[in-house]
Length: 373
Image 1 (cartoon, rainbow, N blue to C red):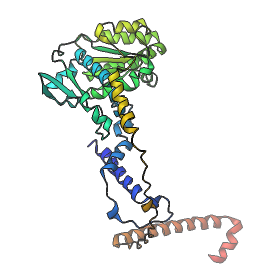
Image 2 (cartoon, one colour):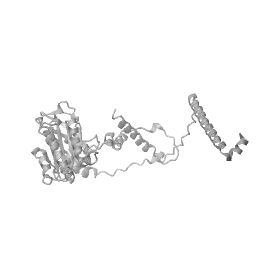
Image 3 (tube, helix red, strand yellow):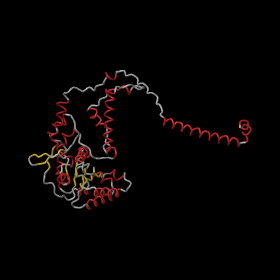
């Protein structure tokens, strides 16, 4: 039931697309035109265009950090994304514990040489040659031994802002782990709350304990550390230390700089070897070749696509729509009209009586009124 509004908006937008393409005259004419409804046939391209236009209700209601990886970036970030996901499966056993029922993260297991593989569902269905070419690279092997409890799982992705760890990679990771609730801990969540920053931090951890297993996402944690007070730092450290050893809460954070440049208190939080993932500063030659070869060898060699203007339909002269016949009232509607008129006349009589009484009490108008009353 929660998707009915989105489905209705999708169908309406698809019909509007074919209406704009088939009858563009209705947007330039000042009169109502007569249309042939049999010519309005919705095609698959209309629904695909509507998918790119309609914003789901879940994206409009709240600021969801989850975003799927763009098809154009899959050749560049597939290996990095696979490495981060394997690290998360190693330190956060809840993410791989549900692989037996094959329902978490839209997992589709494939038995191959004794290892299980999953489809990350990184992008929506696309007919582009680039996405088809890299489809096979979206399968990642998961070690079967990563199912033991880990002491307070944490992961920090460090790298310069131009590495796009916070804006591209982290949202794609959260999109893959969509079965887990995500609680965002950033500057906006602390300053825009009606509570004090300390109370907002406590509320985030309280909700995380209530919805465990879950993820606490802290984008640009070094920026949060620089603008918040030492009291907020103490509260965050206290809440992290108060988590049980086998807590099912993953602290997932990103930074604006390398690990050597962030504050020492943050480095102490992510002090273990597997707690930090270093974002590579360059792409391997194979990934660059997979990214640029379709652009240079295929798309650049194709002639430019000319958008059809539908000139044939635009020049079509449509007849004016005949005005609809006047609506004939039934007995019930006639009774309502008569009753409304009677109420209106009653109000007029009351107003007239009050006006005459007021004038009659005034000595200036009494002589004139005596001639008519």
